[in-house]
Length: 257
Image (cartoon, rainbow, N blue to C red; front, top):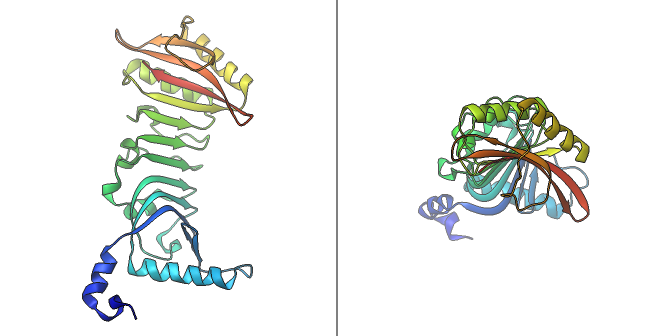
């Protein structure tokens, strides 16, 4: 018999010690913590060992609800009852997909801020005028649906998946009117090379800026131009092609230098 089961004092100490993990995945009625999985309704394909691990995980989390994790991901969590255990999360990275952020935020310990990375994928407009967004080092928007006020966020490193040209233009015009901090870099994925080249051509024509030589860029760039923002800064608008393990991707980059 464990000492903590015999002593209420030791039980209180045990509960105060947070669970430590690298990855914590939370879905409706399902949890996965560094390989330990729990589901409210295990399917017939679950082995007895997996069921025992799941039961152990839930028993553990009910006693020690404080979790320190490097990465936590929420998937399709709409209401608090969807999560089978109450949690207090201290984290470095947060990701959520089709999830109600209002349900997630109360679980995030304020000591987690600023987050090293915040990523989201949602079809609904998201209010990003929140401290958890504004303070994050890196922000990733993984959907083409754009969030309200994204051009105003103070974050210096942002990734956006396949935005429309109109949305990119909106960001550029806002930065032209409201000087952006040097070092800010927004990267945006494109469908393919032709999509990237077309976006840059449309933006350059509509903004009536002359072609600039992007000597500041160390990476190979597809095409681009520069826009003066002030006497001491300018905005570089350019495209890059990446090759990772023979997989080619194309990005439109907005960078303030």
